[in-house]
Structure formats: C-alpha cells, structure tokens
Image 1 (spheres, rainbow, N blue to C red):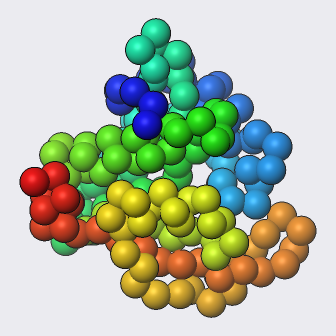
Image 2 (image 1 turned 180 degrees about the vertical axis):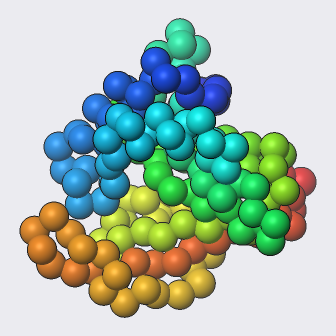
Length: 165
C-alpha cells in the first residue's frame, strides 16, 4: 500500500482535480465538473475536497465527500480518482477519506454508487468495508449513450469502527 497523507483541497488544487477527472478512459467511470462548480462545492460546508499526497507532497489523487452536514448522517463519496492507476493509491486514499468522514462529521452511513462495470473500484470499496446494498438499474448514462447499472454500496459508522479495532 502506498504511503499517503490527506489534506483539504484549496482553490489551487482545482486544476489537478480537473485534469485527473479528464484522464483518458476515466469518462466511463469518473464524473467531471467545470471549475465554477468545483469552486462552489469547495466553499460549501456540506462538501469536503480531499487531496492524497505522497511523502514529498505530490498530489496522487482526490476524493469529494458530500452531504457531510445532513441531519440524518447519510454522507456520500461523490467522487474518487487517482492520477496514476494501478499504483496502490486508491485503497489508502479511500480509507483516509472514510476515516475523515467518520472522524470529522456526524456521518452514520457513508454511501456511494459505482458503475457495475468498474470492477477495479468495486474491489477497492469492498476492501475498505463497503457492502453492496442494491442496484440502481440502468441509472448510469455512459459517454457512448449506452446505459449501465449503478451498484449502491455503503459502510456504517459501527462497521468502520469495528474494522479499526
């Protein structure tokens, strides 16, 4: 597993975030926003933009959490992306974001949806402790105009706490 640390993103990180969202092949699985939308969400207390960095301070990936201030404690992993896949960054990046969500907010349940064909991401999510709850049938509109199912997955605060020991 790659050693990385998490920090809150700043406006200066938006070009990195946008470049990572737009990497070749990511359009099938990773959403993307324009700079204005990222700026607005970065400023919102219901969002947390997190940057994963290596020991030299180079950005390796990002996570966007949303709905962190919901009264019912249902927060969402809106987006996760790594700059260079297959280097062991995704698992520690997501693990750090899950820790952040449960340590820094009142989240009780952290959920996400994932395109059914994104097996790499599903493996990472399960490794962290996310459990599949259901299927949102044909809810994903892919860039080529076809539809795919979204898998709904979540981890509960007590499940996270048990995994941490």
